[in-house]
Length: 301
Image (cartoon, rainbow, N blue to C red; front, side):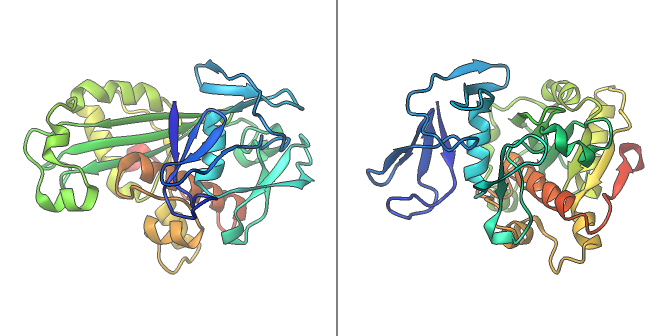
């Protein structure tokens, strides 16, 4: 299984050319290849054995004997997070990570799973779903969802993804294709919204929803639920666009914020990529604590 990493290759320095396959980081444009280091102990994992469970491939840290998921490695590299072995977490003694481009403090490599970070979520840990829709237009009662992207960070800090194109009842316009890169040909064999919405409903459950511009996406979610006769859970919804404005950001679009904070955001205006970028903005604001989370219940949209 190979996963793409949107980062400059250490060999040829070209962007978006690096792939990770189990232990190996390799470049598709030059002959660079290297075993990566365990982010927990910085030891080479050249000889480790990968196993797999419901959360995907993982190996045991050679020194600390904790599970390190492949998704964790990809997340660190994809978002340009650096591991600092000289400073360890006060609570679990794991290394700290930070984002050099953003002049922010360091956090535990296992954040938010680390029990010492539980204050972030109150006494009870929370499950978050970062959600984004791509649509055929701006009107809920006239246009249609054409892509769903959702990224869940569960109570233990493990990532889960939900991604699907959705076939609309009519062709999408060239303007939508120019924004999203999604074509009518892409959607011909995609499932219908009624075939995916129940799956999304159970994926979200009662998790806290985090959305960039919830005033746009939340009504689409509610409308899809109601059309499928699904009971609308009164989920808490955190809008990172509103949070950016409360934090007095100069420009609050997802694109501008990812550039400011050095967040990897290839495939912008695709649902899962935007959901992943929203996650990073959320945790940056949660770490900064300039202003409280702006929370609204789903029924309020």
